[in-house]
Length: 396
Image (cartoon, rainbow, N blue to C red; front, top):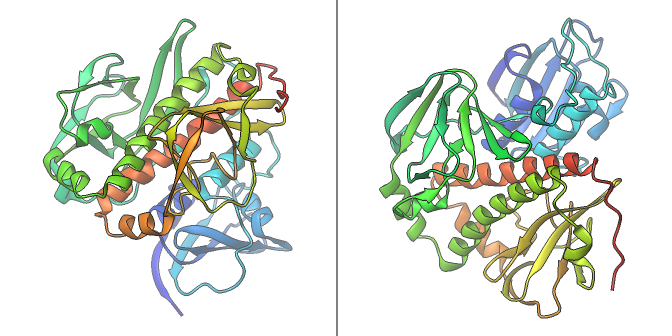
């Protein structure tokens, strides 16, 4: 029998929140869920923070996880122990959370409990109604040098302003909002353990331009992070990993801009990839990782509504499989198209993973937060793409 480490009520901590918490702490063990509205208990097996199998009644694997997301009233307990067996569930935890929330919203998952799920509004500015709150793991307070409180409704960051601070949310929830010609567009919702700021803050630049506003939904307590310590951590990285992290930061800006342009119907995907060679096909089992030395590449997801562009990559950017991160794009959830002059250099993902494992928990949490924001924003871009009627372009 393993060690009992976590327990609580689903009314206090939802299954999506539990998955994020266990994932961020790379937990291995078994999550047991019970409900007075269900005859059977549910079990979800975790390996290094990722759900690998599940069961409830006659259901197993992803079908069981989907069913358990409908349990809105119940108790849970997590026991750390060795988990054996086949990795049945292939989706990442954030992909599971997003898909299940959408299925709940569409009435595709039966709800057990006295509470009903809030239906998604059809208004574009209410795009966060079925999005998860992106949270992080427990905070390392040795990196926190001060605290600031922001009252509900006030801006933490103003779009277009310069700033060099980096914060972590200690308490409360905030929304990331971009101003558009059609009015404010809500992009992400972030909570405890999430970071506010960018790689530019690590580099101790005079101040980077904030690309979006961040507003406190309720009273928010912020931890001001030690930039000099983080900058030291950053400068100790290998040149290859530092380039990967800078490119990851740029990727978030890229997919954010794409989501906004898709919402405004300003994107013509055919102009991006017609005449381009397909480097990776979506869903392809690729273990390689590359950096662009010349030319450009385009990340595009194939959806039931057509192609949706997610990012444009240039010299110094990476694409491929990163074994310690899931950004919800290539190779499993998007294709890569390259320009005729594309030249690439192969990176060693095992060396990068070994270096990543040596970072402080705060640096790893920051990197994972970036990846989760890219993943959720990619899903949002595809939601906006449903209304654009995009056709699948021809291949050259």
